[in-house]
Image 1 (tube, helix red, strand yellow):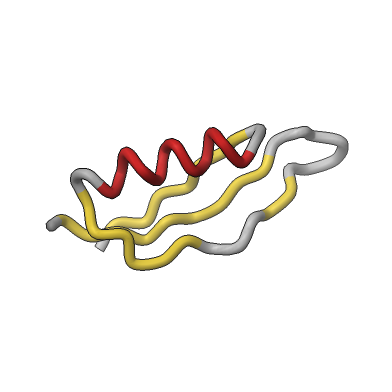
Image 2 (cartoon, one colour):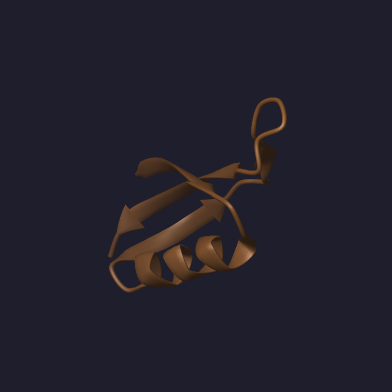
Length: 52
């Protein structure tokens, strides 16, 4: 299992990246969104995946 963290500005970026990951990996779980620190516009989430 691999766990990666992605940082993104809008939901479309996140969904596009997850779609690309689905081509090569089995997505096990996508965590909830976490807000950036302070007044940051960025959000982050964690993705658990495994090789197909």
